[in-house]
Image (cartoon, rainbow, N blue to C red; front, side):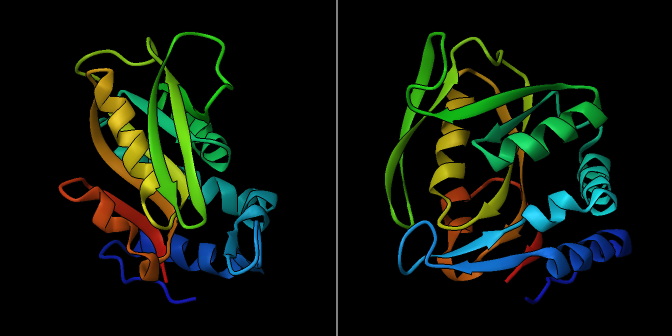
Length: 184
């Protein structure tokens, strides 16, 4: 899988490591979808530390909270929030959160769904890092950004481990700061 050139040699080194650990799972979760699996990255403790540290290094001092999407975004988002010493807010599929929520409908490469976040999870003026494993069509990320803004917070940046260029997800995040370790 090709990696995009990063101006920062450390970020390029981490991107190359990530690319070497990603694997393709054909026809998951349904026929015709090529799933980008990053669980080998999670299983490699040294690699996971490098990814989390790289993301945290690039966003230190610029964010007040990290928002991660269900479910792989929870793993990375919580780890990055911990390293930054900021809070973590989960964004979940409809019906999974116990309190009052804000909701957003969205489409993805194989259907439509609804995301929710607790109404009181963010506060006006907070700077938010939106973090997930893969940017595909951009529907999930765009819906998450709208949830953040419904709560009065500001999306400081959107960060992804992998971006699938052919699916055009970046076009859903126009006028937002978007970074991906690996693009392909």
